Image 1 (tube, rainbow, N blue to C red):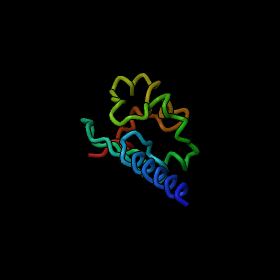
Image 2 (spheres, one colour; image 1 turned 45 degrees about the vertical axis):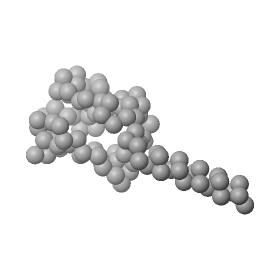
Image 3 (cartoon, helix red, strand yellow; image 1 turned 90 degrees about the vertical axis):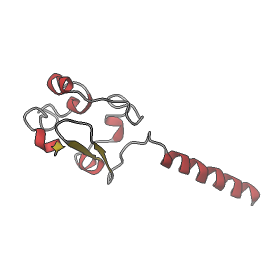
Length: 107
């Protein structure tokens, strides 16, 4: 019984550490808001992407490292269409970012 209590305590502690760090991805049903943009805040919705058949591993860690603040999205990336959000938001996989600013940016 002591071993079971010890194992459960370790699992609970590990879950607490994982839940309190900023390196977790945004699962379906959760959102993360990016507020630094000049064009207004952008809200990433895990459910919207999951509803379109996307999995976390489609973007993490290849396009987005699993660390909060590790990725800075620039206007040059919008026009190049190969990095971060624009690997898919290119008009072929998902709606094209260029010319559709208000779909993501909200003032």
